Amino acid sequence: MKKFLAVASAVVALTAFAEPPKAKPADAKPADAKAADAKKFAITGDAAKGQVKYKELCVACHGELGKGDGAAAAALTPKPANFADAAHAATVTDEYIYNMIKEGGAANGKSPLMASWKGAMNEAQMMDVAAFVRSLSKSAAAAPVAPAPAADKKPAKK
Image (cartoon, rainbow, N blue to C red):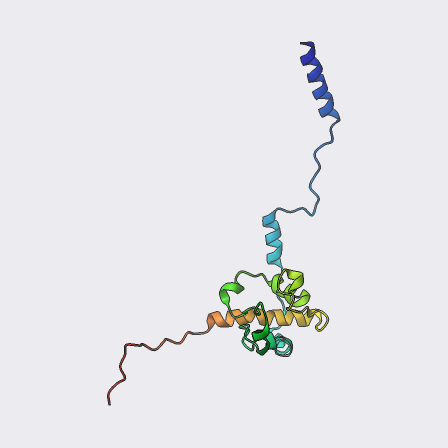
């Protein structure tokens, strides 16, 4: 019984003087809150202005319509991103697009061949290019698809 009382007393004493659990820092957020923060970033640029800079700086690799088929793309591995791919565009955030333009591929875990443009453009210009890039996938998704010619149809007789 004495051993039990000694152990119980020790446990009570240790818990009385133990440090209270540390509070989470004010900036610690659950994963879903961090995801919500990512959704708060929105591209606010002017796509028409962005198209001008895109043609100047991006067409060589990404192509006129953003399909990753620019003149320089043939020599690049990996190939440049296809901005017209609506399915892929749905998987990336506005902030990701902006950061790829601003910081380049290496800073975002992608190809180091994608340059950082923060030295060539100001914040507003990068936001404009981001708006244009985002618009390319929306344009592709909205474009009507021409029906394929039927292979089994015979030409009409005159």
